[in-house]
Every structure is written in C-alpha cells, then in structure tokens.
Image (tube, rainbow, N blue to C red; front, side, top):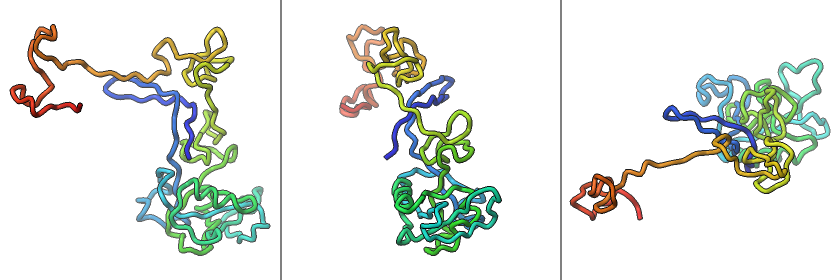
Length: 241
C-alpha cells in the first residue's frame, strides 16, 4: 500500500494556484537491469518513473555476504562495503509490484531493492532470469543518498535537504498539537488542537459557476439555459440525475 504523507504541493491551473498539504505517492523508479541494456525501453534515459502498482521485474541487493549472492559490481567505491546482487529470489519474478518486490528482497539477510547506481554498475547483472535488458524496480533507502524526486526513495519521500527520509505524519483535526506544521489542516489552534484552517492557506478550493437557469427562477434570463442541448427538447438533458 502507499500511504498519504504531509508535504506541500503547489499546482497551477488557469492562472490560479492550488495548495495541497497531503500527498499520496504511488510512483516509484524503474531502472534497467544493467547500464545501457534497455535503450529501446527507456528511450535513451537511465531510468523511468512508473506507478508502483505496475508489474515489473525484481532484482535485489544486500551488503550481507551470508546471503550467498555474488558480487559483480563493475566499479565499486573503495570506501564502500561490497554489494551483492541476485535475480532469483528464490525464483525469477518478472511481474511484481513495487511493494511485492521490496518484500521479496527483505526476506534475505540485509536484502533490499538495489539503488539505481547499483543496477547501472551491474551489481546484480548476470544473475539469471534474463533481466539484464528488463526494467526492474529500484530505490534509495532513507539517509543513503541524494534524491531529486519522491519516486526515487524507497519510502516515497525526498526531504527538503534532497535526501530520502521517513515521511512525516500529520495529526488529524481535533488531535493534540504544539505547532501548525504538525496538523493535516495546517492549523494548531490556541487550545493546542488541530483545526480546519480559517484561511485559504493549505486548503483545496473547488467551485462551479452556477449558470443553469429556468423560467421563474428569478434570474433575468427567465428561460431554460444549459439544462438541455435543445431548450425545446427536454428529453435530451446535458446533466445526470
């Protein structure tokens, strides 16, 4: 499942600005099984964003040698621990959601999804299943590396400092609070309780222009307007019941 988290997102549409303080992140990253192995699928890019519920291939990594996986990283960093990769977990999984893939990897000692750099560096290359040229799930763990987008992070949250972090949890209305930032609605009242914001800040505003008229409704038009494709034919309404 993908949880909703507190993170301000600003949307622009028709010269208006809308602010949402709650975000549900479902997108995650797909990387090629090895560097330059998926040029056709990626269109020359090194990675692609996908909905985490889509079925894709699984490759796992770990820094625990007891898993018995091979170490095949092409250019390991001298100061970094060895990374071991595997495709058979324990069988080839070519169609798993992001959550399923993460769960499969976590069943092994220190097991996790490989990062984009590890997959590009062939850390799980040649470990079977013919996944070298398949798109596989990958992500960056919390506090383990820089990020530019939420989808890059295993937890779906790229912090303000550009590092994957644990997503903050907001407090619902009527819950005890100490600061506005703790509340889902963005307001901690004087009584120390989360409340609905009295202003438009942190609120989602929706509206509709009421221009449907009919004879005798008091409007100057004084006729049917916008209810039917043809005002003279009430059998063809333009709205649902």
